[in-house]
Length: 100
Image (cartoon, helix red, strand yellow):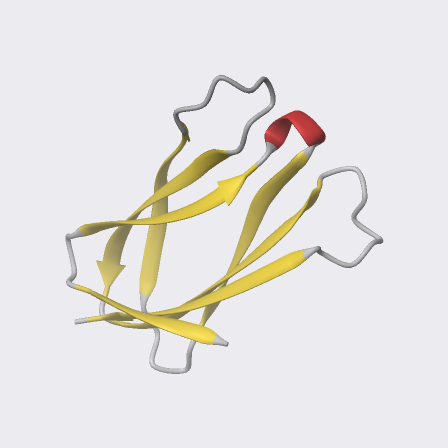
């Protein structure tokens, strides 16, 4: 299932996904530009801690993007270990970003 987001040229937006980097699993993304064009740039990626007393607890992986040009872009996120590229991702999320 693809989620839709809207942004305006010059605006920033975040995508927040739960992860557990202590197990090696993190979100990786790729960008597909639709025929209508559209452009974004990754400004920052950070980790927000979830309040927990448990070592190795899940965190939130936050991706901050900047909208550069009008059009549509699809962000494809895959949850996997970086050294297991040949294996299927354990989770996948798609976001269609419409930039006005």
